[in-house]
Length: 228
Image (cartoon, rainbow, N blue to C red; front, side, top):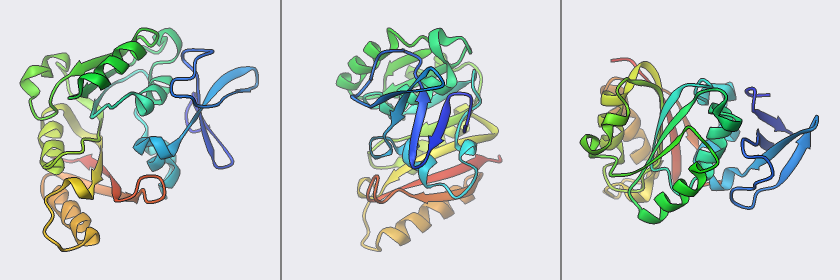
């Protein structure tokens, strides 16, 4: 078990279903010890892919259950649903809270539908760069932040959001898509190395750079800790 709700069986990742009987995106359901779990498909989740690919303790990528977290670029809710299983549990018995921000109205509709049966999930229609529009939902800094926004300036968006919302010593996960960055022809390896240096100079310790190729091509998940 990676946490009370997440287990690794062979090469398959599973989370205890906080909405029993429901498959969120067509994933398999299975019982372990009489408890229903959902299979977490890492090919549809950057967080899931990072957990499968990390060379460190997999639990280090997870927030503390029952805490409040910020997720920028929430999408249609695949990763969010599994994160909710771990963070909140059924009926939000753990008291967790996920502020899930996305710019696309279609994604917001899916997130709102998901939130109906998953208390603790707070969908927000908003631009990850415009904190003034939704920052009031986070009166205190969080200890875990995840960003997956496929738009130019991903690194700057992550740094600005982390400085405002992530506590010192908090974990920040940046899923970087090479094709969404300003391309200067230096190649992906050079681009990712430049990003790592930029993060290091901006008050973060880069604890791991996880290649997601095979799950998500042209992506690297930067695992950082804010130190200033």
